[in-house]
Image 1 (cartoon, helix red, strand yellow):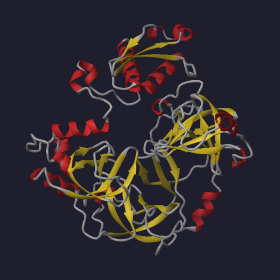
Image 2 (cartoon, helix red, strand yellow):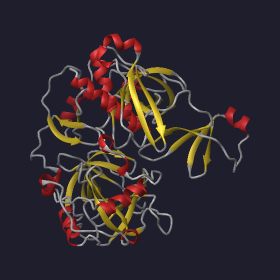
Image 3 (tube, helix red, strand yellow):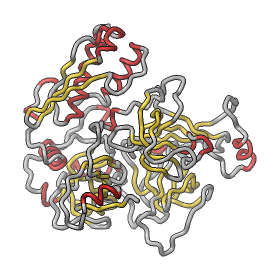
Image 4 (tube, helix red, strand yellow):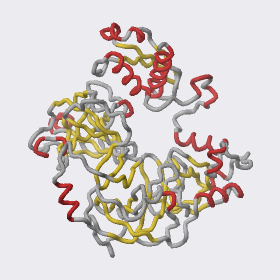
Length: 495
């Protein structure tokens, strides 16, 4: 039976019995290991003593169109489905709902090879959902609709249980989730119009009635009657006074955080000790005093970052590479100052007050453009942004000024995936790994890549007969995306 070893720094390494017997592993042994899987949500990394036959590819390269086939191997069987290795840096999930008899244990065994199709990618969790059957047409819509179960209406529950494919029904959109690209529907018309998530007060003291939609351990997804649902987090709450909630139950909740980018809500059953400051008030304080010190309370540590509550409706984040007096833990208090607002994360980027107090050249806050100014989002001060970027990527010592011309600008997201879609549409072929060939070279701390089409497919797409060279980038993945973007640019111009 395979056993699990724990290496220094808390990294988990599953090793089978044969490897363990041959290696004669003991506590304190020094090993050469290979990263085989990383979990975006938990930050856990899985190791192996033997390298994979092929290098792992990036999660960003997975095409979730329901038509691109992937050869996979079953790595783990769960009660809810199976985890499948399709040659990328994260294991993908094949749920029971896509399996015969809705049972993974009856259909698969560990190590079994199978062909699967990616049907959904979740940016926030890094999870990829798979299916065994190929979709009749590509999944080109970013929003997928799912009927919501009306737990408080027995008649609707009975009707929903009898629905079958092809039935025509009247539905009402009740919620959208930016994190997983879903729109939730109901067969029951709401008595009052759905509110915008931005119309809710995230001051931590305004109570809202909310209905439990789903339960995840201690945490619950809640419906507040708005166009987005909220997450009731109780994972770190003490067991004293803890009460389990059931689906359909209505309770009183308070909004303690709201992401300024996605609008996602963090909820609590108890009011905050003081009124949370609105994002507009936080920006106004920053404009008046950009050295203001906040008492930040750590509420989460994952993905290489420390997440803090600074008394604002918008949370704060800083890299875990910042120099702190001691190891950081949930519940710790850290004195921080705001560096800038990150619209991608929907949070304020902060740094320890002692670190940024020594920075000079902090001038008056400016605003980006008319649209951003209306949202009161100030531009980051360049001195503070440079400090933050250095800490987030302390392995990269070159200044961004070393990259000139087109290489200085960011590439559009997932250029490799979009290039594969263009080639697949032009050649009318289902592409497999290796049909589009990337060659990467390293020059010091920078990477450059070129991309070409496999010779057997050139006759189907003569416009892709050349090799396209991308700009220098800081990572291998970014270099490959730059080459793909150059190919996309040229192929579209040539049409």
